[in-house]
Amino acid sequence: MFKKYFSFIVALAIILGGILLSSLLSSQRTHLNRQPVSTAATSVKTILIDNQEFNKDIKTSGRVTAFNKIEIYAEVTGVLDNSRLDFREGTRFSKGQPLLKINDDVYRNNLLAKKSSLLNKLTSLLPDLKLDYPKTAEKWQLYLAKFQLDRELDPLPQPQSDQEKYYIASRDIYSLYYEVKSMEATHAKYAIEAPYDGVVTSALIKPGTLVRAGQKLGEFTNNTIFEIAAPVSVNDLDAIEVGQHVTLTSQNIRGEFDGKITRINSAIDQQSQSLQIFIQTTDKRLKDGMYLVATISSTVNKRATMIPRSALVGTDQVYVIVDSALYLKKVDIIEEGNEQVAIQGLENGVRILGEPLVSAYDGMKLENVTLN
Image (cartoon, rainbow, N blue to C red; front, side):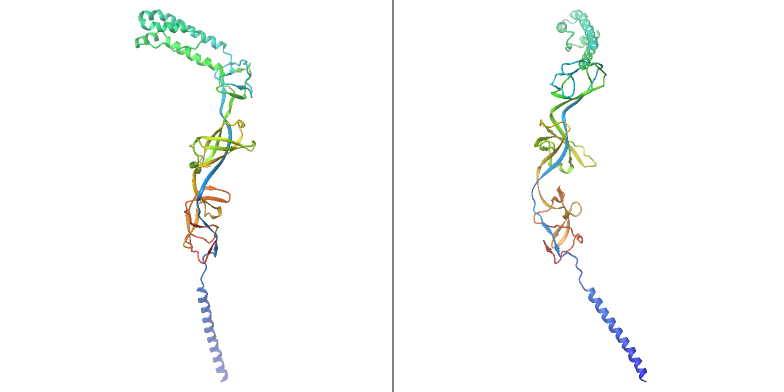
């Protein structure tokens, strides 16, 4: 009888124990679900926007080239004559002084023969003009009096009527005159004069050798005016203008050189998104082929705030703090350094997130946070 009641009591105890254990576990699960989850950092570094005057300096570099530099080619054929000054590297010539002289004996004689033919034509024309056009004969008489074989032809007298023009043209005066003028232009190419004061920087021919038409003879350079072609980013276009002064420096020569922007190219390099500016300088210490660094002070004064590069989200956004919440805001970057950037687009007094925050997102609430 006792065993029968004992088994019943044990079974009842087991059932009651299971009910109590289930109730305890359920209470603990409810307690855990009700614990709040933290969604924000407890300490955040911030930056207060304080826009100030910002003068942007643009740095670029380029190679120095002589502004006046020409390659000399022969346009006629002949033997190069000796001259008072040899056409060799380093030889200086003044403007108008002969650089090279190609022997022109044969061509000059042909030119004189053609001029003699024109003189004969004009001489035979004059008696007929005195009969048919006496009013203009005096002009032609004066032209013949000034005619010289060793001088360049003067322009022909102008006819006073179409009939007179046709009359002169029928004697082949015009065709022979322009043939002589063409030969005179060719004859002038046998002598090459210096177009400006300069120095021979390349000489590829010596006296006594045969020169052929189209052959390169050398290079002639003026070393008083120099030009530097340098790339500038498209973003800096509003900071440069023609006539702006530039400071030039070299690693090889002490001191600074003054330059001025003379031209700005409008063609943009698609890969680098830059265009070329041309800077002119006249410093005598410079030499063709040197490299210079150019510093251009911006002509546009802007108001901006410097912030750490790490405060940027992506390339051009920051987190603005408004009512203890983060909001993404796009800004304009006007200057970039290795560690800091200058930004525009935010008003004074606006506070932004000053350091990276992995858990940050647009609209995130900052609760119980200390703003440093």
